[in-house]
Length: 367
Image (tube, rainbow, N blue to C red):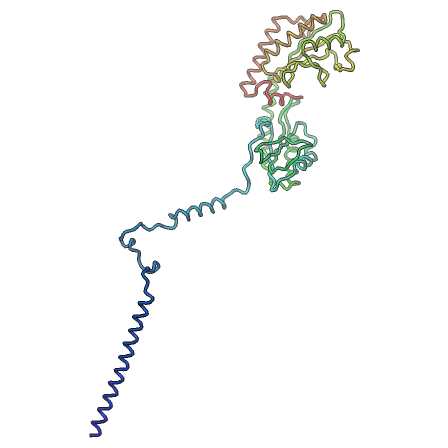
């Protein structure tokens, strides 16, 4: 009897334990379902779930990062910045220069410099050259080059030095080239400018020699003389007749026929002495000469005609004769022959894009 009671109590205990465990499991599942409902989101996790369109569903196709427009523009902008040159592009040559006739070196400074400082520095470094040197500063606000001089003002980042290759004394040589390029390099060093690009020596000297040969071939001056029949002309009368015919006495001691700002031809003393306002009333001379500088005047044949007209007028007024250098009469046949020669020389210049009387010719055929 006792054993049966014990067995029944054990069975009741086991059943109670099972009920407690079952109840706990039921409560645990209930709380778990409530928690899942509380945290469940209608949004998919794009990092874990496959996109419907990637599985063949609707919607636009996926684009790679490089296809996004905004990102691409940012990449391009960054690339443009990273690839931007350290130097700014150099301005074109000043219009007063010509690559055929000038050895040009540009200088760029990190910060804008006073042009007066550059001017003073180049004077110290470029003394002793046989050909003219001109300096220019680039005005950013006006987008143009300004030729520099002792009174120039302002600041610039770009500067330009130009050595003329040729004049009537010949072309530059090795010494001029090295003195010019070395001097500009020293100017750059003194001003802490970026290293300048120097022109090639052999090519520059060869070009200068070729240009000088061409200029020598067309460098012609033609003169006619007026000699006194009675042995001499008086200076005061020469001045009166020259001014009557529109000639002006210049600082060089010669009378000039001026057209605009340039001399078309000149009237000089046949003797060595020069004309001046102080000595003309006392001067006497056996003759005078009229000269046309063919490369330096435009429309040379027409200018020659005007010169011959002036010569004949002076001969009549002063009682003289128009003759050549051999004192032979200078007649219409000789004048016609010279007119043709002038036209030929100036045609050669025009064919070489170096028109007679133009700005470049004025420089190359200077003394």
